[in-house]
Length: 102
View: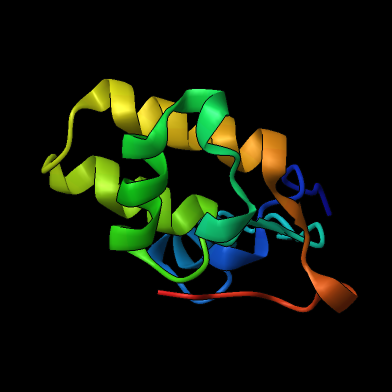
C-alpha cells in the first residue's frame, strides 16, 4: 500500500487525517514539533510575535498556527513569522506519540 509523506502528529485526530485515510493510503506520523512561547527568542522575529504565540496557545504546533491562519484574525506576515519560530526554536515531541494541543 502506498504511504503518504509522514505528517505532523498534531493532525492525528483531525479532518485532515480522516480525509487522507479515505484515499486508501497509509498515513504515517513523524514525532512532531512543538515550541512553548517562552522558548522563542524575542530578538528573532520580535516581541510582538512572542506575544502572539502566548495569545494562541501554551504550546505552538503546526495545527495551532494553521488554525490561527484560517481564522484570519492576525496579519499574515505575523503568522508566517510564527512558522519561522516553530522551525527555529521548536523541538521534537517526546516519544513520538501523536500530539494534539488544540
